[in-house]
Amino acid sequence: MSDVSADAFAPSTVVERLAAPHDGPVPFSVEFFPPRTEADEARLWHAVRVFERMDPAFVSLTYGAGGSTRDRTVRIAGELATSTTLTTVAHLTAVNHSLDELRGLVGAYADKGITNLLALRGDPPGDPLGEWVRHPEGVSYASELVELIGSLGDFHIGVASFPEGHHRAPNLAADTGNLIRKLRSGAEYSVTQIFFDVDDYLRLRDRVVAADPEQGAKPIIPGIMPITSLATVRRMVELSGSVLPQRVAERLAAAAGDGPEEDRAAVREVGIDLCTEMAQRLVAEGAPCLHFCSLNFTRATSEVLERIGIDTRGALTPA
Ligand SMILES: Cc1cc2nc3c(=O)[nH]c(=O)nc-3n(C[C@H](O)[C@H](O)[C@H](O)COP(=O)(O)OP(=O)(O)OC[C@H]3O[C@@H](n4cnc5c(N)ncnc54)[C@H](O)[C@@H]3O)c2cc1C
Image 1 (cartoon, helix red, strand yellow):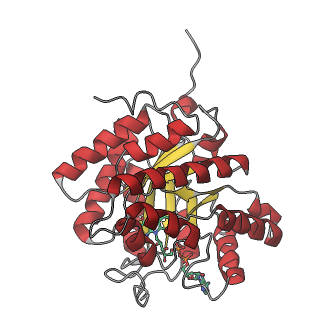
Image 2: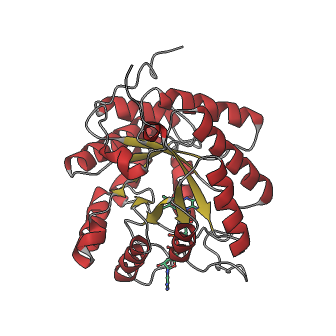
């Protein structure tokens, strides 16, 4: 009988998972969001099971602030951690939370065995580009949330990074300084906002390494997304305060055509080509992992994975 220590069952950290053996040219991870309806929840669990077979380095679940979404987020994160083999990262934002509530949420995640947390400030509810108002008994910035979580136990914390710079940062130097502050506060890695120009990611990496080589050694995990609808991606980009690079916008607009409705099939094809090209370049440039924003769908991400040489274990075979 083999000697298996209790440690073999301890939850892995994201950094450990990035260093573990993996199929294909690079580890990958998948971001899910908490569903609002039962039908959406069924779609989420289908996606979870499809990706689980491909052994992602980790999966993450975004955090929505308001009451019922919050409870559902914590419940689903717990189910991901306890009823799958997946290393689960729970996002946590500071929006509308007092310090006591934040401590309670971290405790609720810990009770479900979740020790990997992505610490975020969050955006103002309703209008993400509107004025940020700190909860009177809360925190102002993600770096404070990193410190708070770190003070509560043995957690493994990631933070957000921004290849084009955060839209509220006065300049790229301030944005880089903020990422370094979050890493120095105890974060072990960052995950980027979705971007569509690999050069922006490479420049961010260079800036962090130049400003602080020690923090620059921590993984910066690129967040990417296969575009399947021009209207959706335009809205996502607008809400995050960034822009679609002109070259990308032109390729998508040409595929969408001039009709009253965009040609979804053509946009999807170009979107998957664009994402594959980005993934291949990121792999060649030594990205530590590819983090796919799946929107709880499986096919487009699976197509990109397959094209870059990751075995998708039948995900693309018609049922
Ligand atoms: C990978 C990823 C996952 C995300 N997941 C979610 C999610 O699950 N739920 C959700 O609601 N949102 C999510 N977001 C969105 C995120 O909450 C917003 O982008 C938010 O505007 C910034 O969050 P942050 O953690 O980077 O904030 P911070 O790091 O606090 O930065 C916010 C702004 O404040 C500035 N700043 C920070 N510290 C200081 C300081 N000491 N002095 C002066 N200025 C400072 C920064 O430069 C920046 O402009 C995610 C974003 C990313 C990239």
